[in-house]
Amino acid sequence: MAAVQCDYAFDAQGQEVHISAAVRGGSYRCQHCNKPLVAKRGEINEDHFAHKVVDTVRPCTFSNESYRHAKAKQLLVARLRVMVPAVYAAPPEGYVGKVPRLALPQEVVAASAVRERNIYVTEDAELIVEPRVPGVPFDEQDGRRRLLARPDVVFFDEEGYPVLLIEIHAEHRCGEEKIARLQQYGVDTIEITIPRNFDASAIEALFDVTRNTIWLYNGQRAAFHFTPSDSLLSGEGSISAAELPGTISDRSETLKCRLNRLEGALFAVRGLLGTADVEQENARYREHAQRGQEYIAELRAKRSERDTRLGKGIRARVEQERNRLADRRAELADAEEELQGRIRKLSAAEGRLDRQITAGEQQITGVLSYLKRRAKRLSEAVFSRRSSLRIQLADRERSLERVREREYSRQRIELDREESELDKEAKRLDAEEAELAAEAPGLGTAEATAQRDAGRRISDLTETKRKALLFEGYYQELQKLESTAGAAG
Figure 1 (tube, rainbow, N blue to C red):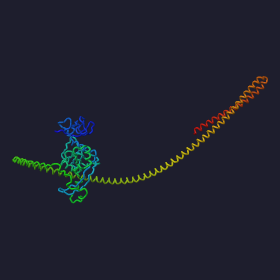
Figure 2: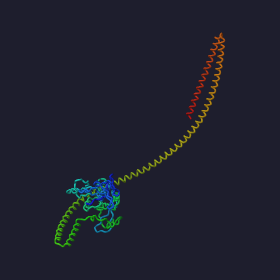
Figure 3: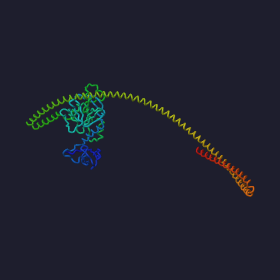
Figure 4: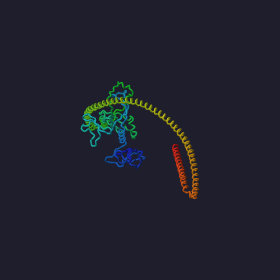
C-alpha cells in the first residue's frame, strides 16, 4: 500500500500547521490518529507529512481529501450558516425551453448543527436523527431503521427539526442510492464540492458562495409542478433548460449500465474467439443476468412501494411541520408589527423626553449664568468692603497709636514729676530727721507732726501707685486693641 500523504498536521502546541510552514526535525502529530509525523521537504517529491512508523495491520488513511472533508464539516458545525443556490423548476423530459426560477440564492442559518448522524425512518413513518453508537452496525436492523443514511452535516431549527442536510464532496460524490434515500426524507439537501489544495480559509469562503454547491433535493422544487405553458416562464431569472446543472442520475453507474457494459465485453470476446464455449457461457450469463434483473426489479418494486409509502408519511409530517412553522411565522410577524408599533411609541416618547431634557438644560444653564454673575458681584463687593475695612483699621490703628503715645507721655511726665516730688520730700524728711535729732526736747511734738506728715505722704504715694496701675490697665487694653486689629486684617 502506498504511503498516505497529507499537507496538514498538529505541532507540539496542538496548533494546525501546513507543510509549507513546517521545519525538518520538528515535532508533529497526525490529526486523525495522533501518531508522530515527519515533515518531508525535499527537492524531488512534493512536500508532505508522513507517518514515522507505518502500521502494517491497520495503517492510518488520513489524507488531504480526509483533511478537506473533516475541515469542511468542522467549519459548518461551528459557523451554523451556509449559502444555498437558486432553485429552478424541474422541466419535463426532453424539454429545451425556458425554466422558471423559484427562489434566489439565500443563506440558511441553523440554530444548531451536528456531524455524521444516523437518519432513518421507523416502522411508524417517524423520521429519527440519532448519534452513531459504537458497536451498533450501520444497517436497517430487520426493517426497524428504514431508508438509513448518514449525511455529513445536519442543520436544525430552534425546535430541533432538521432543516438542511449537507454532503461534502472532497473525493467521492454522493452515491445514487444514498441520494434516493435522502430525497425520501423530504428535507432540503445540498452537496458542496471542496477543490484540491484548499486550506481552511478557502474552504470556509466556499460556504458564502454557491458556485460549488448543488441541490440534491429541494422541497420547493419537488412540490412545484411545471408545465411549458406556465406564466412564470417569462418571469425574471428564468433560464434555458440546457443551462440547468447536470442531473443526479448522471453521476454514478447503475446496475443496468454495468450489465450492458459487461454484455458488450462478452460480445467482443466472442467475436474475437468465435468458439462454442464462449457462446454457451454467454447464454448462461444472459440467463443468470435475466434472473438477476428480474430479482432486482422485484426488490426495487418492493423497495419503491415501501419507500413511497414511507415517503408519503414523511412528506405529510413535513408538510404539517411546515404549516405549523408558517403559522408560527405569521404569529411572529404580528408580534413584530406590534413590537414595531411599541418601538415607534417609544421613539416618540424618547423625542419628547429629549426636548424636555434640552429645555431643562437650557433653564439650568440660565440659572448657572445668573448665579455666576451674582457670585462675581458679591466677590467684588466683599473685596471692596474688605479694602475699606482694612483702610479703616489702619486709621484706627494709627489713632490708637497716637492715643497710646499721648497717654504714655502724659503718664510718664506725671510719674517723673511725682518721683521728683518724692525725692524732694525724702530730702526734706532727712533734713527734718536731722533737725529732730538735734532738737531732742521737742521730739515728742515733732514725732507726732512727722507721723502726720508721713501718713499724708503715704496716702499720696498710694494714690500715685493707683494711678500707675490704672496706666498699666490702659496699656494692656491698648495691646488687646492692637491684636484685634491685626486679626481683622
